[in-house]
Image (cartoon, rainbow, N blue to C red; front, side):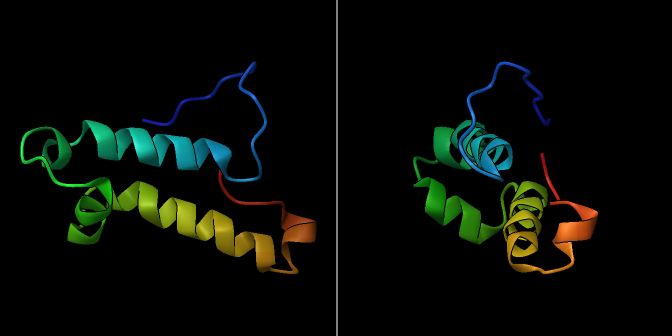
Length: 74
């Protein structure tokens, strides 16, 4: 679930998504029960919705249309 904090420290454009993706991976059964690394679990398809949202946020940073529409993500 996305977390919206008003007093969250600023860490860049996609910091909220990056933090949520990391928490999702660290709390997934793949890491906790199977003992795999978060990178392996990400490649296997865990937390794919947050991975895609983080990708879209990073891609929107390079998109010139983002000047008018705003960045995607939170």
